[in-house]
Amino acid sequence: MYSLIMNLVEQLERSREEMSIADRIKSSLIPTKLPTCSVVDIAAYLEPSVEVGGDFYDLHEPDENTLVMMIGDVSGKGIPAALHMAEMKGIFKALAPLDLAPDEFMIRTNQAVTTCFEPNVFVTLIYLVLKRKERTLTYARAGHCPILHYSHAAGQANYIKDRGMGLGILRDQRFKDHVHVYDRKLYSGDIFVLMTDGFEEAAELGSNDRYGAIRLKKSLERARKSTAETVKQSMLKDFSNYVVNARTLDDLGMMVLQVK
Amino acid sequence: MDITQLIENDVLNLSIQGELDANSSIDLDAVLKEAIDRQMTNIMIDCKDLVYISSAGLGVFISHLDDLKGYGGKFVFYGMDPAVYNVFEILGLHTIMEIVESKFEAQTLMNES
Image (cartoon, rainbow over all chains, first blue to last red):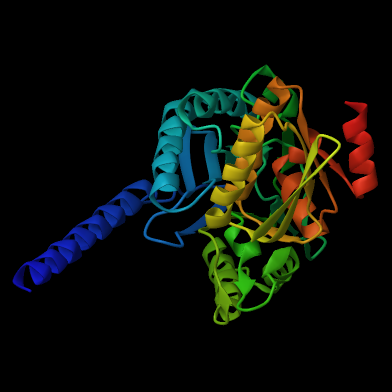
């Protein structure tokens, strides 16, 4: 009896230690401070479905005129996905200072994923390069959820349906043909919301109903738009009202860019 | 999730019912590995009762793409719900995988190979 209790105590302590390690991994991989930018106001959110997960975002300023950003999602969940996510962050930290064009970034990252990740692991990613003086956003989408764009002039939100293959799917030269680069001018009052698929795929308990792309679009249109943070908070509130009676299936990641 | 297997004219027809999530993708992987070991490399995937596919589920198909190609085989998906097709499309898989509406079209594609 005594040894059984001691075993349980040891197991509990091990679990606590593992959870503490997971917490430290999580906090060390989330950017502690978002850069201030004269062109866009930025807010971000990351919440794994278990202790740690495969969603990630990061930002870097290679020079005064340039801000590079990425948001992504490694397939799978939990510790295995978190380990791959940490590798993705390492790849970003190595490549971001080089101020690569988005297509070059994607090609090099696909090579790294091909080398480092198992064949059943793939990554979805959006990589963006913002140029302050030119007020432009140049980006490539690698299989990630489309960008949700609110046009201040039109007063409505729409998904930008760009092409682009996920990373780690085509593990050779063929990948180059599936990388596409897009340019956007940044107009004051416009908002770009970049998300991982956990929002769209959150499902109602006991049914196949999901939060879905349309609810997200309406949520952005309804959001208070004073700052990127209020947009994020409004959208998260709308989402949390839905998930009260739902099962979340995946990690959640979001970046909001509100053009000044 | 349930998987029903049927062999017709040397083509393996896998019917997937329910949600293909992280747990059930392990079962799918085992089925596909066994099929490939048996040289059953022309595989039709009946998706009409597939209501959800997770990234882990997609990863299973992706991981066997090159294996099948190496053996001269392929996947052909059919009967896909628009929501499931959307997941394939966002990821760019619709440009490298064969996805058709009906079983008849899937059989026709298989016969062409």
